[in-house]
Length: 370
Image (cartoon, rainbow, N blue to C red; front, side):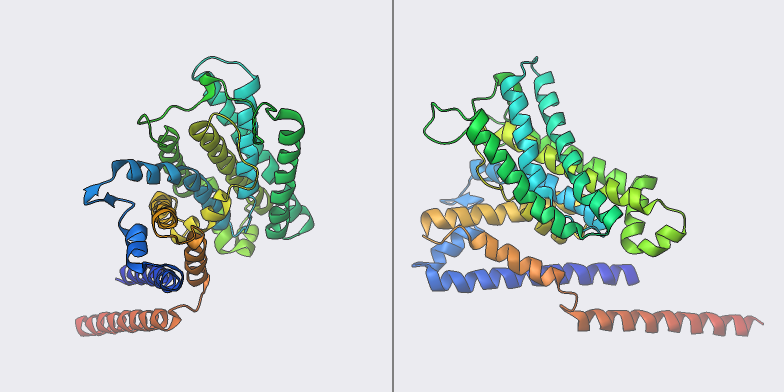
């Protein structure tokens, strides 16, 4: 009963945070939209229904845009479970995508193998780069949040330097790489849509991470460190190694997500700025309460809102940046420990009273038997 009540409370708390975020968005839409009703329709209805019919292409677009945020959400989930506030997923995504693009352009391999090698290269480089803030945290006790945040911009400018000065296709009007070899492009699940087979890989990654976190001793160690690092240390766990491992896994997942997104969406490398998937992954992980199985559902929700905001900007003249405001409000209320704290306290007190009553009844029964 206690766990059920706590679960119901967490569900209600999440629903309340999302409702407040939508309410804030509605107020802003009233202020800046010429037709607020049409804008809200674009935000909440048109991503699925258009002109009274199901818009299959829009639905597939929503699923396609879930793919990178599933990977970054899983990455944040693993790192946050170890109580490591590493924000380096954004840089790992960009670097993983860039390295995968170079493999796709300059290293000819057979069909199938080429995609695998490119994704693997992006995955490995993502894990390697995340060693930097992890080791600095373990050895020098520096804040992994600050180190990883600054590292994102170092990675971005390094990538842009090489893209602009070494690997750019000068025959194009915009800065971009040369086209990928066809053997390295991830095929679409459905032709003429954005949805690639990378989505299926993301779902497999979700199941794999959930198994790792809840069915292996390494996952158990990571979660125990997040709950009580001091207890984990005195119980004999290699805390430093597990902290590094959690952040390396996060980097690998982010790098894989970047590689799959680049190879599955375009046929050239086009990113001239941090893509934003790492920041969105933080919101996704918070919505999922660091539960890997819930990551795709949280990513679906954010992707749905993202698509709605895009349609608002097209058909109702509302800036597409509205999604950033909604995410920020959701993040604010989910991260606020005292949000609905009074309700949580009432549940705890009620559970304690019921537990005490059960003990009293049990004690009275034992006394009667004697």
